[in-house]
Structure formats: C-alpha cells, structure tokens
Image (cartoon, rainbow, N blue to C red; front, side):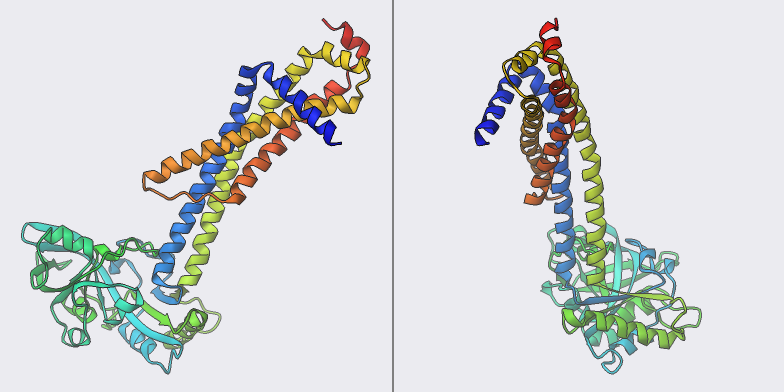
Length: 424
C-alpha cells in the first residue's frame, strides 16, 4: 500500500517536472487564492484581537445607559443631536445603592463639542462634563496635576483636565498646569468661558465605543458643562446627561447592573413592560460580543471572496490536466498494455492534480504570510495568523485539487489501450 503511494507520488512528480513552466503557471491561481485567504483571515483575526483589546482595556464590568438608541450616537456628535431623555436626576437615582445595589460606582456625563483656545492655538474638541468617578470607571490615569473633585462639581468650578493629545495640540511643549484656556460657547456670538487647567491625563489610545478618544477630550465638572458651557436642559427645564456610566462590582454582576438600571429608569420614565423605551442599557460584554460577531462575519466573508480565486485556480488545474491526458494518450495506452489497471491510471493523474494544488497551497501560505506581515508593518492593523487559518487554506487547496482532478483522471482511466496506442 505504502509502496503504491510512493510510486504514485514519484510518477506524479515526474509528470509535473516534465513541463516545469506549465506546472508553475498552473499553480499560480492556487498560490494567489491561498495567499489571499491567509492574508485576509490573518488581518481579520488581528482586527478582532485589537477590538477585543480596546474593549477589555476599559473593562467588561462597565455598563452604559444612553438616550434613544445607542446606535444613534456618532463620534463627536453634540448633545443637541440626541434625545434629551436622560436627566441628571436619573443619574443621581442610579448612583443610589438602594436602587442599583450591584453597582460599584456611577459616573454621569454630558458631552458636546466646543472650540478650545489658548493663545494662537485652537482646537475643536469634545468637552465632557463628568464627576470624579469617571476616572476609575474608564481606567484613566493622571499624568500631571489632578482630576476633577467633588468640590469642583458642587461649586461649578471653572477648571479643566486635558487629554494628552488635547494638551499637546494647545500647549506644545509648555506645561499646561495653571494656564487659562477659553471655551467658545455654542449658540452665542463669540461668548467664551475661561477655565484653568488643573490636570493632564496619561495617553490612553482610541476608545472602543466609537466616540472621541479620551486623549482628545477636555474634561470639566458636569455642573460647569451643564450650566456654564452648554444649555443642558430639556423642555421641562431639567438638567440632562448624555450618558450614565456604571461599573459593576464584578464582571459576574454586570448583567445584573444592566437589568437594575433598566428597571429603575423604566419606572422613573413611566414605561410598561411591553413599551418601547426612550433609553438603552448596554454592557461592555454586550458590545464585545457584537463586535466579535461583526468582525467574525466580515473575516469569513472576505475569506470566502478570496476563496473564489482558489476555484479559478482549480479550473486551471482541471484544464491543464485534460491537456496532459491528451498529450500522454500513447503513454497511457502503453501502461495499460503492460498490465496497468484502470485504478492505477486514475490514481496517477489524480495524484498529479493534488500534488499540483498542494504545492500551490504551501507556497500560497508563505505568500499570504508575507503579505499580511507587510500590511501589519504599516501599523494600520496587526496580523494574527492561526493554525486554523493555515489548515483551512491548505485543506481547501487539497480539496480543490482532488475535486478538479477527478474528471481528467477519470478520462485518462477510461481510455481504451488499443485506441490510445494508435493515437497520433
């Protein structure tokens, strides 16, 4: 049995080596197909890993409550573009341990855009009014100075904490602490509020929430944002927030906090069980699951598109094998005349097709790995190559060779030896 396999492989190699250029060109379709599959799957895995890393950097025990639908929020969107359905009183109620017992802390926020000016420098940045709990909720760190304090919130203090990029854009290499920045108030004719910089945050990187990065954000007391910078009131005159952030006591209680917040706000807003809510509660775990599902679907889709070129390569293999059968008709007749069975001829040509496809697959793995590495070097996205993706691509190339090699091999095996010997 083993001897027959070895002999079939030797015969297949001799047949392919007889016309090296043709064999190489035939493999090219498989090489490109496997390379594209490997590269796209690796980049897709890298993108998924990066998203998971970003979400996990904040923590999977974080729960958000947003007005309207969460999907309606957009990066940099001002609060005026959102439904004013969450009030500051809702946030205070959520912070009461009697209402949300599994929450470790609650940090409301009111975010809008504004023009920030220092000297000749000015930037358009997100201004987030919040409370001291926000620092721990989002795992932020202070690089210099301090973060917001309860006395700042109680006194509507004119203080600001800058993200690392916002500080660099406004001050360059100067120390921002103690400096005055001016915030242009939207809806006024050049009205500005002066704020004193009391802290600068350490670099955090992009967030996972589709919102502005904390590095580009200016943080102020929520009371200052609501009353001094923006008109943060609903038609009833109540102070509003753009989001309520809660941190559960552990990852295991995140779902409980989500449900407790939903029950609390459902009751406060007067909704029945079957009514559509004017807010949405989501946990980081929910977002992580959705993000992983989306990236997995996109990766599979891109891999399937790349797999089409493998099918094209398979058609090329079948075409060349049919040409090979025609060219070697007399050889086939001679082999049958000296005792070769139909199965021997079938295995020989089928082995040639599989070897051709597998060689192309192995070269394609190297090609795809190199392509993914080159893309990763640009810094756009990392490439994560897995054993599963390699086995999938190589296995598929084997299946392509087997499938598209059956017909030519069967044609060769069915030749009549007498007619084959007479073939010119």
